[in-house]
Amino acid sequence: MPPFGAEVPDTGAGANYPGGVHADLQRLLNPNMLADIAEKAMDRLRSIRTELSQAEGDVSLVRRVTQGRLDIVGHEVERRSGQNAGALPADPSSLLFEMPDILTDAATGTAPSTGAGRPVPILEPGPAALAMIETLDAIASPAQLSGLDQVDDSGLGDLFAALREFEVELSSIRRKLHDRIDAIQDEIARRYRDGEASVDTLLQSKTAGTD
Image (cartoon, rainbow, N blue to C red):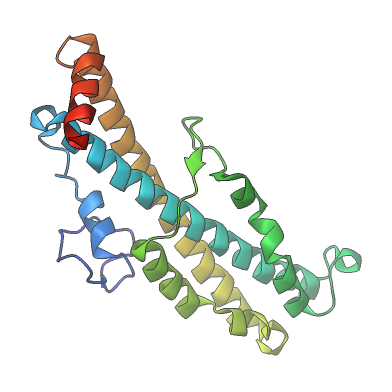
């Protein structure tokens, strides 16, 4: 089975890649998707940019939920090792109630900024996010997290490693989406700079779309 974040060809809308990547996300991750970027119509570039932004929001959201679950497992590892024992709750399941705090930035409509300093908009989760959440639940569901005290040390270590691997793969996917968004932004800026596009043309296109 290919890794979760592998760049694979489109297998058809709505299908789920065995590693957990929704088909729409597979298509956006295809390395050849922007091969003809200079030939694409401006409207098409903007449409792809919107899709990429939605996917970026989906991946960022699931990544943050993954980090929250990773924190819960990490707290239990620390509790057992005696580190910060006095500051940690005796019952690890109580940490589940802290999950809303982990996602507090969502209330403001933005996620943490990307490496390029660009905030990621939090959109309504799409099908790709739901598919990734299913994959995450298969690794560590809320029910599993509520019973961490029943998991032996070896199992706890395996759970932490699996969550960490998933989080790293999500980060890799997010970077790839950022790169594609930046490439489209650069191409749009180039067209305006070189006179291949203008604000007047944009306004005419919007006007025509409302006729």
